[in-house]
Image (cartoon, rainbow over all chains, first blue to last red; front, top):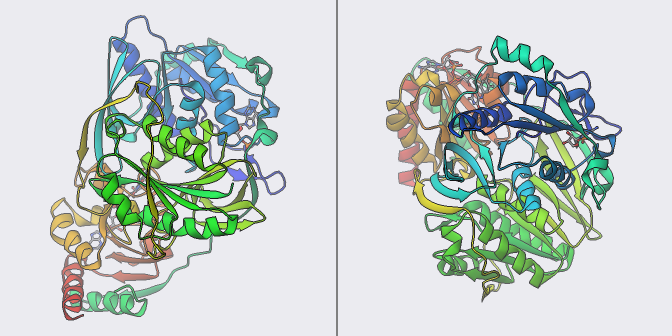
Length: 253
Length: 327
Ligand SMILES: Cc1cc2nc3c(=O)[nH]c(=O)nc-3n(C[C@H](O)[C@H](O)[C@H](O)COP(=O)(O)OP(=O)(O)OC[C@H]3O[C@@H](n4cnc5c(N)ncnc54)[C@H](O)[C@@H]3O)c2cc1C
Ligand SMILES: Nc1ncnc2c1ncn2[C@@H]1O[C@H](COP(=O)(O)O)[C@@H](O)[C@H]1O
C-alpha cells in the first residue's frame, strides 16, 4: 500500500492550501520505491497481493493507474472535499481509518514526500494504527510473518526484526523502481480504483482544515541569493588566497 | 502549552549538537510560555550525558538508562517522552529534525493529539500561541504556521538554526520510572555506526562537498577531509559522486539526499544542479571552486573561484592550517 503521491506544489495565497490543479499528476518518486519493495515482496510470498492506497483530490485519482501499470493488484483512493487542508494529524488519522478498513499485513510508505514536507506522517500513521514503524529500509527479508529489515540511520545502519502487521518506509537505496510493461499498462486501464469518502471512515473527530492542529499563517519566498563575487584563479595559490581572505572577511576562518 | 520538553538525541555516546541548540532555545520558549524547560535523555550512557546537559539553561533533565531504549526501535522512546509529558502537563515538545527525530515526532504527535510543526528555524510566542517559521519545498518557500493552542504541541527543529549557549544555575537531574511493561515489537539486532567520531553532516557548521569534478574516491580522503578538518567541518557529496560509488549515499546532499544548513558550504567540482541546490541553499555562506566560470553553482554562490580544484584545495588547507597553528 502506498499513500499519497505528491506532485510539484504551490500554495494558494487565498486558501493557503496547496494548489493541485494544473500540475502534472505523477507518483511521488519515493512512493515508487515503496511500490517496488511491495512488488518484490509479493514475489517472495505466494498468495500475497499488493494494494495501492492514496488520499487526495479527485483529480489525482488517475495517478494510481501508473501504480497499477507497474504491477499492483488493486487500488483504493480516499477523496473528499472535507479532507482539504488536512495537516499531518488529520491526514494520518483519515488515512489510518481508510487503511484499517481496507486491511493489510504490511504497510509500505514512501519516505519523505518530494516537497520536503514533515517526514512525520509514517510515525503518526503507525501510532494511529497501533503498529510498529520501521523507517528508511534499504533491504527487507520476509519469513514466517516477520520482517528482517536493514535500515539507514543518521550515522550508519541497523538490523531490525519485527512481526507483522507493521509499517515500513523505504530509503532510496532500496533499488530502482521498475518500469511499467506494455501489458501492465493495458491491464491497468481495465482495473477499477475503489473509492472511499469521509463517510466511510466512521470518524468521530473533524478532519480537513477544522480538524487540523496546525494553521498556516503566511508564506513568503526565501531571500534571493544572487551571483556573488567571481575570482579567476590563474594558479592554486591565488585561488586559495582568494578563498582564505574571503573567509577571513566573513569571520568564517 | 506551558512547559517545554526537549528530546535529547545521542549517538555513539555523544549528544548531538542540535540537542544543545534545542536546549538553549527551550529556555527562551519556556520563559515566553511561563513554564519550565525540561530535557529527556534515554538509553545507555544517559546519566553522564544528563550531567553535561545540566550545564544548559534547563530546569529539569529527566533520565533513564533503560536498556529497552537501545534494544527496541522507537516505541520505548515515545512511551518515555509521553510519560514525562503527562507528568509536566501542557507542553511544547521540541525534537531534533533528524531521521530518528522525525519518527519520534510523528508517533508522539498522534499519541498526544498534538499539532506538529516540522523543520522549524524560528519560534515566536505571543499570548501562549506558538508560531513556527519553517522552510518548505526544498527552501523554495518560507512558511509561518501556528500550533493551534491545545495541551500539547510538537516541533522538530532544524540543525544549525539556533544558537547553543551553556549557562544558568544548573538543571536538576531526575530519574524517570519505567512507563510501561509492555513487550516491544521492533527489535534492534545490530546497530552499526559508519561515521562514528565524525560530525553528522546535517549538523556540521561547515560542509565541504565534492562532485564529479573530483574524478574518483581518493580526493575525498586526501583533499576534502583535510580541508574539512582545518575548518572543523564534515565532507558531503553530490549525487554524481555517490552514484559513482566514490562515497556512501549517506554523504549525498540534495533533493534525494540530505539537507544541510551549515554556516559555510564549499562546493568542489560540483556544477550546482537544482536537485543539489535544494539540499544546500540555506547555507549561511556558499563558496564554489569550479573550473567552469559558467557553472550553475556560480548563480547562487557568494564566492565562485574559477580554477582547478586539485591546485587550489591543498593550498587553501595549508593556509588554514598555518592560521590555526598560529592562533
Ligand atoms: C530525480 C533526481 C534526483 C536527484 N537528486 C540529487 C541529489 O539529491 N543530489 C545531487 O547532488 N544531485 C541529484 N540529482 C542529480 C543532479 O541532477 C546532477 O546530475 C548532479 O548533482 C551532478 O553532480 P555534480 O555536480 O557532481 O556533477 P557535474 O554536473 O558533472 O559537475 C561536475 C563539475 O565539476 C567541475 N570540474 C571538473 N573538473 C574540475 C576540476 N579539476 N576543478 C574544479 N572543478 C572541476 C565541472 O566544471 C562541473 O561543473 C538528481 C537528479 C534527478 C533526476
Ligand atoms: N478533496 C480531497 N480529498 C482527499 N484528500 C484531500 C483532498 N484535498 C486535499 N486532500 C489531502 O489533504 C491534505 C492537505 O492538502 P491541502 O488541502 O492541499 O492542504 C493532503 O494530504 C491532500 O492530499
